[in-house]
Image 1: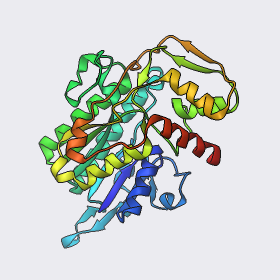
Image 2 (image 1 turned 30 degrees about the vertical axis):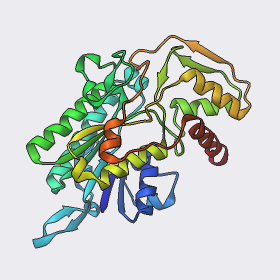
Image 3 (image 1 turned 90 degrees about the vertical axis):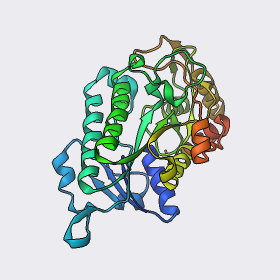
Image 4 (image 1 turned 45 degrees about the vertical axis):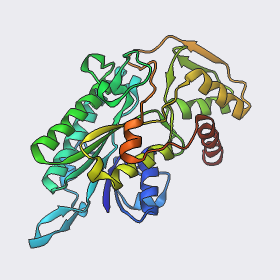
Length: 314
């Protein structure tokens, strides 16, 4: 297949591109930043700001000639990963949530006008909010549980994707990711941030002593996306949690990273921050049944691999 990936220079986009290329698929990347991790993927990446609809339309290199000379998108399926994804940063800078809406809208319009009928949307476990449930299944998203502008951009994004299915016949799969970690991430997200701080023996702050989340190793997340691509026809037009089904406290995350790096960093606990989910563990039975999704990497194994990767490459 020819697969177009937005956000192809990011953590998930880079690893997904690598795995798809290994499997023999063609990849077209779109990002507003170059891919600094993999030169091969960078050569396949178009630098486009997806907030600019005209810039997207102007990229003739994304088009191929179809029958009768009609230009068609050079892809069979689009995976839309591009987004501003730091929850608290979007609380502080809500315009970044608007960027997410605009980016998705422009990508869906490009999909529609190009005649593409398969679309995968990257949503988030943030969509569930703080409902106080032990585990979360896909039918539990409620607008009244929307905690932040980032959450709104994902809940609203899911609605927009569904609207394009109903109005324009664009089949879709929505994946709700959960704290994806591993390689290709030097951001201020909690795992790479704590690794950087621990390496320098600097203090690590946890916002909420009881905070517990479902951390998902990058290769498990990517395996789930690829299963969705390969089983698209049988799995389409619904939503799936991609996670592990187990929770890990942020305190345990910090202490594990400290131990692996033999760090003397002090771990302190502050109050929860506005807009953030305090506890999330996914019910992944739907993805198991429909996609054969089977996360293989335990938290302990995944964090060990992640620390080893950062020691080698950063």
